[in-house]
Image (tube, rainbow, N blue to C red):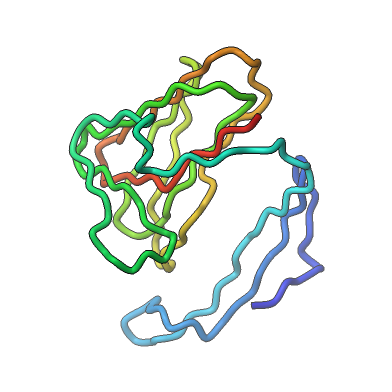
Length: 171
């Protein structure tokens, strides 16, 4: 991969750059085994508050619906909890100044609706198309919450399984 400084652009608290890569062995078309990608990357420059991570299997996370934990013994550190049913949901009560949802993005995953403190829901797609699986992706983050107790609820929108790797709680 190569960064191209010609295509840098300030965006919010960060800079969007383009990563160019080629020769990856993922099929784009049936006629070829290689593809060239132009991948936008957003580099944030704001310092985040300290955070503690809650793994997907923490008992503080309440699950509803059909969820499955990994059965692989690979222990690569990128295991996920997968909600396969259309009614799959999780909830967590927490105290802190923010929360971040960490998930895997891959082909076949659907959309998850995330709500913090009964605010406006955010819809996040966990699926990818023509792209390899990405692990440990920050798909949602909200900061600047006050110090009182908060709640996070995430539910499947029914268009494919959803997943959770961890939640980061910001101090």
